[in-house]
Structures are given as structure tokens and as C-alpha cells.
Image (cartoon, rainbow, N blue to C red; front, side, top):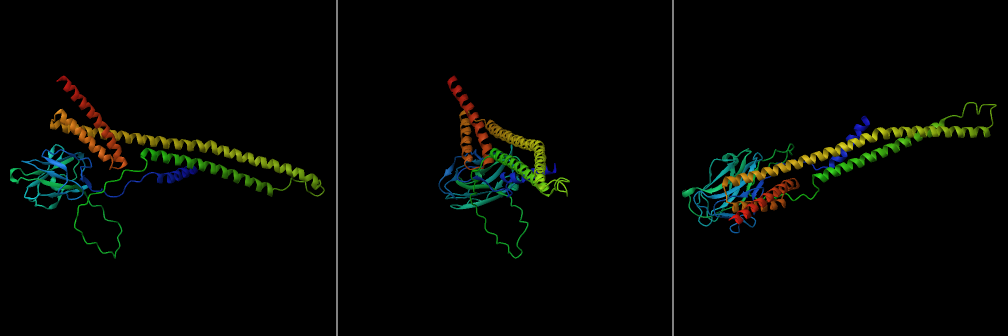
Amino acid sequence: MQFLNRIRWLTLAVALPACPLANASTEPDLPVYIDGLTSGFIDWASAPHNVTNTSPVHSGNYSISVSPSGWEGLHLHHGNMDTTPYLNLSFWIHGDTNGGQLIQVRALLGTNVGSQYPLPPLESDKWQMITIPLASLDAADASNFCGFWIQRCGSNSPDGTFYVDDIQLDAKPGPLPALAAVSEAPAAPSAKTLVAPSTPAPASGPNSTVWILCALIITIALLAWLVIALLASLGFLLKRNASRMLASSSAPTGLLSEGGPSRDAVEPALATDWRERALAAEAVADKQAQIIRDELVPELTEFAKQSLVQGLSSQRKALLETHQKAQAELAKLEARLTELRLPLRERILMFEKRIAELENELLTRGEEMSELIRATLLLVRQRLDEERQKDITSSRSN
């Protein structure tokens, strides 16, 4: 059993590098609007607005223009999310040619609204960077954060369009490195500038199923190679020991003693004796090799089978979890549409808009997130088909 345990450890040590390692880096900033909404945020604004405004623009090609009246503003929605990894809400805002607009920001927490965070009067013809601690919006370390408002402060605010660009949730700073050079002077703090966070490129490698199968194939191949090498080594050692034993053995007692038979009579007897000993040694080696095959191979086969079953079970569990998350996302969207009490045609438009956003996210997210997005996209498309069928039935009945 000690020998089999060593083989297991060796197999795992070789097979583990084939599996992708978890990213040990800190959570990155979460982009909300970078030339378009991303990271699952949806446009629910009620004020006249344009998410592809071309001028003025802080960076990239587009910004968001908002022309509110009363308490209207920009409303960006997201399914309930955890804000524990994030510290601030930051964005750039522009007051157009006149400026002076009075704007406030409020976070949405499930069915509740966080505290008001008023901004200073907007400057004219100038981009201003705004950084708001999530704690000031009552949204720090919240598990039900579902978006925010950037809205006009009613009749107290002058009329006028304002523009917003490069919106993101700033990640909390990671831990300091464990080791640092003593002679190295600390770098001077630099002014914070907002740069569009790079989105992860689509994963070019195989998905998790392929990783599991590759690891299992490598494991089985290594086990087979180890068994063959072990059997060959044992056979070689046994035969070599048998040859040494035969070479060092003396002639049969009395054959070469004084007065005994001549050398011509002794040599055939010695050859016969050596042949019998060689055959006996080979029989012992074959028997031991057969014992190894009977005891070792079934156990290695069972080990490989268990590894395969465990891998497939893990993959099935991951698929079920992905489907459940997708159903939860759809349920949240339908609950929100129910609260808004939108007409059937507008519900269809909302589903179509969400589908377009999911298709866009598929091009920018990693493989793990892509699986969830595909599952959500499939459910939303099915729900859209149902809504369209209701619309057709309603039109025919009228």
C-alpha cells in the first residue's frame, strides 16, 4: 500500500499543473459605463437621455447625456450584488455650456433607497471627477446593491443638460506586499486619473470540462507507463539475479571430485542443471510479475475510475449552479418589470434590450462568466418569445 500511495501522490503532482490556478490578485475595479453599459448594468432612466452621445466626451467615443426635469435623472440598474470588494462610486460629469445644475446621487438597496449625496454645482464647459464613498450612500459592504440614481434636485436646480462618462465602482486597495526593499524610497503619490479598466479578454483555452478530461487522460497515461516500467524493471532484476546465482553456483557435489567422472561427462550435467535453475528463476519472476498485475492494476484502474466520476460530478454541479443563477437573474428582471407595471410592448422592448446587453457581454467576459451569461441569455430569449406570443394573441383578439 505504501507503494500505491506514492504512485497516487506522484500522479497528482504531475496532473495538477494541467488545471488552471485561481487568480490570487485583488478584485479589479468594476466598470459601469465605458462607451456603453457593462458588467450587468441596465439603463432604466426616465429622463430624456442618450447613452451614445458623441460630444462632449471625456474618453473613448461616447458619453451619456441627460436632460432632466423635476427629480428625473440617470437610473442605472443591476441585479442585487455584493459591494464588499468595492470602496467608491466614481464618474466624470460635465455641466454643458451654462453649468450650475444641482445634482444628487442615491444608491438603490433592494426596495430601499440610500442617503442623498449632493454634488457641488456643476461647472460649465468642464469635466469634473466625482468620487463618492459607498459608505456615504449607505451601500458599503451591502449584499443587495441594485444600482444608483444621478438625478436633478427638483426645482432648486437650474435647467440644462448634463453629461456623465467613465462610471465605475473603485475596488478596495489590496494588502501591502509581505517583503519590501529597505533602501527603496516610497513613491510619491500621483493624482488619480480615471482610465477605462481593461475588460478581460475571452478565454482562449478549453473550458472546465476539457481541463478535467485532459487531466484524467494524463493521469491514466502516467499510471499505465508506471505499471509497464515497474513490470519491466522487476523482470530484469529477477532475471539478472538468477543469472548471477547460476554463475556463482558450484557444480553438483561429487561430479568433479577426485576420482570422479571426467570433464566430458560433467559438462553436460552442469548445462542441464543450469538450464533447470534458469527455468525455475524465470518461473519465479513470471509468478511475481503476475501477482503484481493482479493486485496493482485493478487498484490503479479503480483509482482512475473514481477520479473520472469525481470530475464529472463536479462538472454537473457547476452546470446546475450556473442554471440556478441564470434563473435568479431572470426572476429579478421580471420582478422589476412587474413593479414598473409596464405595458406589454414596453416589456418586450426591455427583454430585447437585455438580450442585446448579454450578447455584448459575451464578447468581453471570461469563460466562467460566459457560461452564466449564455444560460441567462437563453432564459431571457425564451421569456421574450412568450411575451411576443402574448402580444400576437392580444392583437388577434382585438
